[in-house]
Each structure stands twice: as C-alpha cells, then as structure tokens.
Length: 592
Image (cartoon, rainbow, N blue to C red; front, top):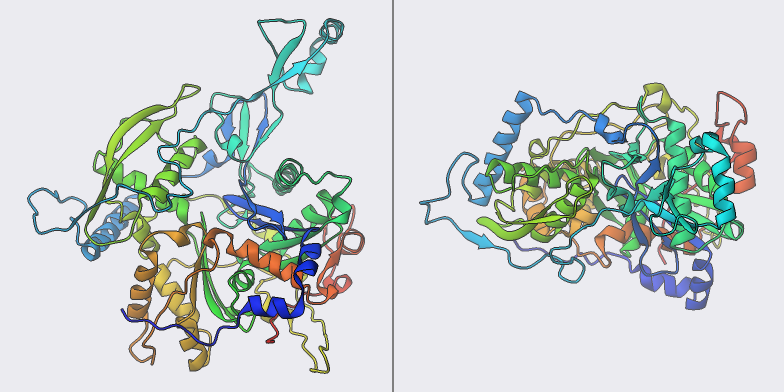
C-alpha cells in the first residue's frame, strides 16, 4: 500500500536547540528523575541519560505462611463461550494469514505458503536460548562466635521479627545464612514457588492492584519499596541526597485521579523528592518522538491505549483503553502450542510461576511475526520445576503469526478475570488537575489551558475499557477528533509505542486494517504509521525527560512541603484536600 510522509511535523530537536543550549540541558537533566510506572515494568532514570532502567514492577516479601503469588487469586478459567469465541477468532486470523484453521491439518496442502524463522526480531537485544535460573533467596551474615552465642540466648521471640537463620555447615561460628526480607524486580519473578515468599505486582491491567487480598495501603507501600530500591541500587541516589532531586512522573492514560494522587504521595512523601510534575504517556510520547500532532497507540504488557494529540494537547474524547497487551499474546502463544501438541509435557503456569512468563515473553519477542503463510521455528523451551535446575526441551513452535493477531481480534486473547478495586476507592471527586493556570509568553496573550482539555482524567469513576480490536480503536479515536483536516493528519501520523510496538510485521498490519476500518463515507485515502525515532518501549520515558528539561513554567511543579501540608488531610478518613491548594498543570506545545 502506498503511503506518504507527512510534511507538517515540527522538529522538537530543532526547538530544543533554539531554547536551551546543551550545557543547560545537561545541568537540568542531572537532578531530574523520570519515573514511568507500568503494569509489568517501571522505567526510571535520570533525564540526562539515553535510556532508563527497565525493571519488572514486582516485589517479593518473606513470610512464614503458605507461599503464594497474590495474582494466583485471579480466575483463569475459560468459559465455554469464551473458548468458542477464541476458536472463531483463530479461524478468522488463519483465513487472513492463509494458514489452516484450528482443527485442520497442514499436511497435504502444498499450495500454502511456508515460512520459517531461524533468527530473531531483535538480534542485538535478545539472547538466544537464555536460561533463567532460580533466585538465591539467602544472604550471608558474618558473625563472631560471641555474637553467635548471644543471639542463641535470645530465644524464639526474635524469630518472628526477622527471617529465620540457616546455619552454614562449613563454619557455624563464622557464617550463617538467612532469608532476604525483600527481593525486587526480575529476581522476585525468578523465586521458586517452594520458597516462603509472597510475590506481588502493585499495578495490574493499568490500575492499582487493589483487591480483598491486596489493600490499597499495601499497594502503595510496595510501590514505594520498589522505586526506592531502584533509586538506591541502580541510580545510586541515597535518601540524604533525595531532597536535591526532582521527579517527572509519567503516568498511563489508564490511571484515575485517585491513583495519580497516590503516586504523588509515594514520590513526594515516601521517596522524599523535592518536587514533582505529572505528565501522561500519550503527551510524553509525542515529545519523545519530536512531534506535535499524532495518534499515539501504546501497546503495553497488560493494556493498550489510543489517544490523539493536537499541537501538544491531549484530546480526551479520543481516548480508548483496551484490556489486552503483550502478556496476553504470550498466553495465547502457549495455548496454540498446547493445542497442536507442540509444547512439551511440562507444567507451565504464568501466574503461579512468574519465571514461566519471562520465558514465554522471550519466545514471543524472538519468534512472533505477522506475515502470511505458516510460520514455524525450532526453539528450546525450558521447564522450571520447584527448586530444580532448568531442563531444556527441543521443539518446533507453530502458527507463530497468530498470537499477535489477537491485537486485532481480541477474542483470541482471553484475559484473566480478576476482582476490581472497590468502586468507592475511585470515588475521588476532587480532581487535582481540573484547575487552570495562565502564562504570558512574550506578549502572546493568555496561553493557559483548562486542565480538562489537556489531562483526560475522570474524577468520579474508573475509566471504561472497550472490547474492540486495535484497528477499530484507532479508527474510532481519530474519527472523534473533529475537523476533517485534523483527522487526515492523524491518520497519516500514527505512532506505535510500547514493548509490543516493535513486533515484526505489525506496522503494515495496522496500516492495512485501519484503512479497511475507515467508513467509505470518510474522505480518507492514506493511513501511515510513522517510524519511531527511539526505542518504542522507552518513548514515553524519553518524552517525560524532554518535558522536564523544557520546564514550561515552574507553576506546573508541586513542591513536597506544599503537597504534604496542603494536599493531604492527616489523620482523616478523607485523605486528600481540595485542588485549591495546589497548582493545576497545563500541558501544551508552543510552535517555535
């Protein structure tokens, strides 16, 4: 399909050069920490860095009860109707990809295209046949013989306050091992189920993972602990230095007003940053790629969002939230291999054993590819049994082009059903971003924008997810933008971001299916996905860094003392005060 380049995009790099010398950018970026939390990973780093640290948003805490994963509480049973719908969706995708239907045999069909993947989509970043190993949950503690006797005299009372000690058989008087109290990131996901740990994911499906088994307070405590660990261990910013740093918080479109406020309290209260500013991912993505107007399609691990940006302003009526992402593609990959008996006879459970999800995600990134014909690949699958070394199993994976088609036919991706947070938890009628603020740039008049126009947050209810495919979501979003000239520009300025955005073959698939989804009555002839200027997984983080460095008016920033004293009711059942005490935040782009 013929496409054309849009000539109307503004080069943000040229604008940066005109307003801020390299030295100023370096100085401002050295004390700005950009935090972009997501359902699966949190991206965090200094604004002056090229790339952030990408850490699984996961924590494991030692406990003496039954070992468990909080997300095991999810209901993963597929209903009969869902199973039928999934098979129909598979057959629809199979027809388009020119491969056999689910219950057909591929043998004897010489006319079909055959494809084989012997390489990787990302040879520079994906390690071939990477084997994950179980996390060592012990830490060595050096003690003297006297200390050993003293600790033994304390009795059993101290055992409830700390993880139990495991005496090293080599020299009991000099060394003993005990369980680590907390483990973070990928290491937490690689803990064996037999170990006494509770594994938690504080954000799931784009929202705080609040449930009857996981309180809002625990969610906030875990978020604080994870971010604090990254700041200490990765960025080497100590608690005493924290007050000289400022935070740029890039939040997903899925977050509600209450969740944004809780994140601000985590950043300013728990992590003790001097000040913070909030931006949404859609707007940040535009700045991250040096554009001013675009349709941002963010395909994350557990949710996908679509939102249109015009001249640096988010259009809230164009926002679409889809309840699926890369992890659903992983589970679909597993389902297909099991259906065709290509998966080894091993116990693979992505919820009970997060290490299995790591393996499936690697297989998805390495082999899944949207193109016509049967796509197969020889691969090594590993089994991870409780505490045992990984065992390799050679196999041939099949139908590798079907799982990513679930983005267009979401019935292929049967998401787990999980209890929503209590409705009253979202009943935050005080939208902290509903105010306005005014600035006059060089006599240019009032440039203040209503917060509701630039930050699409509903103060009274959780955001609604839509059960439609990606192409329909993009089309519906752009057609909601209004003027025909704007719609044409947006259809020619689609940006695919997020980890799944780099899937091979996804760009032409989106262009073709969006063009087909446009009603014939619309005078739209061209659909184009623009190439990303940076890694699609880090575009939102990079945009947050640029927004923080540009620093459009300090009125957008919230000071720590101001937030803790005026933004929160201490000792009250009503936690947050009215927005009157804090400044609203405008997000806009001024054409140079």
